[in-house]
Image (cartoon, rainbow, N blue to C red; front, side):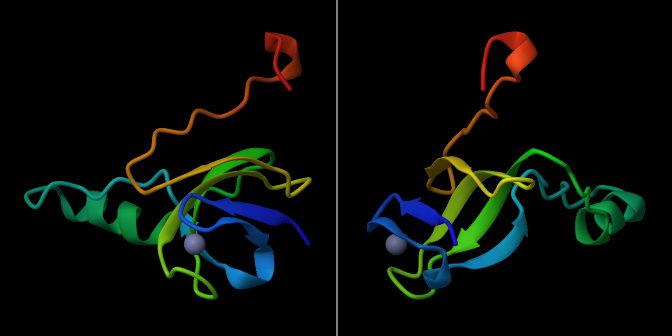
Length: 97
Ligand SMILES: [Zn+2]
């Protein structure tokens, strides 16, 4: 089990949250191609390592939380609200984690 720091409630157990998917996808403009909407709706990467995700705090404030989580270790690096820009941690070779 890991803990997620909700920006509104503070640190809580993962069981209070539901994973809601990839937070890196950006909705295409209304006049975008059908392929762009297909990609937005159905195509997902399956990254190994750091990833930005949506989590819903269903057992708390019911807000949507953006979470940078390592898909291998489940370590949570940063959390923020929907408008937050959360950079991924740098790799060891770059002087980071
Ligand atoms: Zn919350």
